[in-house]
Length: 265
Image (cartoon, rainbow, N blue to C red; front, side, top):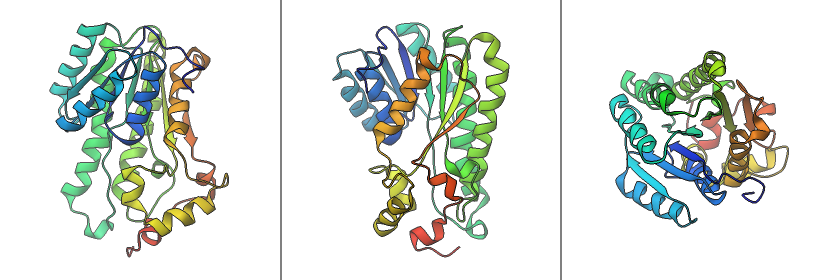
């Protein structure tokens, strides 16, 4: 994967980049020669991710920050810019999710997911704008199938991710004249991630793999490959796109998390 793309001399920033899909993307860019900075709330994970990224032979930065804190987000992005210069690729991937019936979901629980996913996306993208390479920067949001396929026990995630997709589309229109591309990746069920483990039992994951038209769960490399493409010159005329990388499972319609998890909707 990394042999196809050469990101030597490029600066990449990944919010939520210390675990799962986002760390997989960060490592793919590092393996392709980019300088990569990651931000998340957990200091231990930040340190571990920075060490893993540096192991690819390029400078790496790990910064502690919460996407819900716009002032801290601004400070982190300014630090990355001061260290390396303009950001070529920005990946916004911080997310929060859990299963809950709407009637059991407190206003604060709903707000928490909106604050992380939707407000967090806006904070990162808005604060990043002056630090992005203009023209030439690529912004990649990590969305979810819940943005367009309603799912029981996911009213909070459905609302948040639908908002993230609209933020992507509006900024693609507003920032296109600045030479900034804005797109979203919609991962399907990706094996080995905490997100999938939270939303589906072991048995459910096996059944899910059987339902995927391509016959398997996704891998971290599947998402990272799309992220590399979107950050490359090969995607220089692509913006405002919502791109499923899901083996075709979204074609089957909404997932029933109540059945998959054994919970009651």
